[in-house]
Length: 297
Image (tube, rainbow, N blue to C red; front, side, top):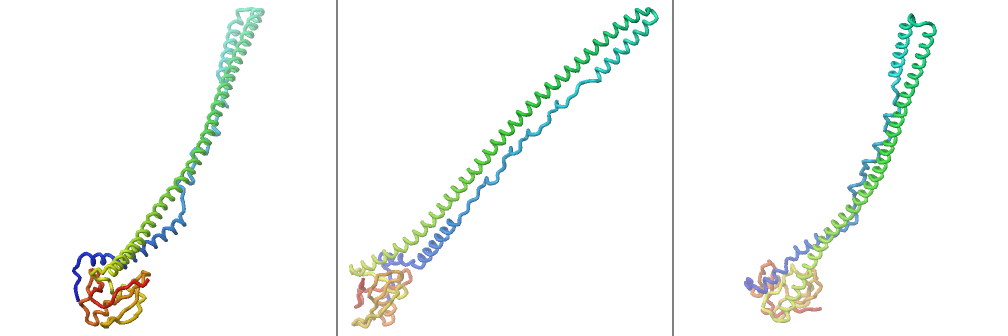
């Protein structure tokens, strides 16, 4: 049996027979594509801002106490001043009682009485001023607290708007991220499946081209004729030299051929027409036998 040492045609044929490897890659790529399609259909989106809290949902200024609302006037100072005035008047009356006559005492008493009334009015005026000041401070504080409470309400509304916008933006970002990611994964899977399918198609096209060219052009090169590469094999006759003739197609291809089997040639002692190709499969030199390789369709 001849050993194939010709570089160009046989090495070209050898490149076509990574069939099992290409088929495995094609199956794996198509399975990956199916898985990615299933994943794409089952994609769930999670919003990273879902449930975000409004930091101003509770008004920090609500129900603040008005520290001036219950402020009282200073009555102790007024009482002390009144007691001191009365004591002074009593002392004056006691000291003057022996020196003045009855009419003098009566006049002095009237003067002291008038002085007491004047002091009482002054104390009442002081107390009234304190009360007015307290009321003014209470009103001012009430206004300030109301302003703060309104500010807190505004902050709460703005916080709620911001929270809602964050949640909406998170939903949009999550959806877009998932869609972009899935689109890329689907694209990768489709590219892989397409490449695997194209590799099969290219290999088949190259095999068709080479075999057809070798047959029609009379190329003196080994043509793959190993039974392991063929299917749908039917014996149709025997050549004049006793070589069985078959119709067949190469595995995975529809084109029908008529020709010989390398294994038959080996069994009848025609090793001279058979070679082992670099791929490990047998090839046949059809120019050395009385059987032609013929395309049937």
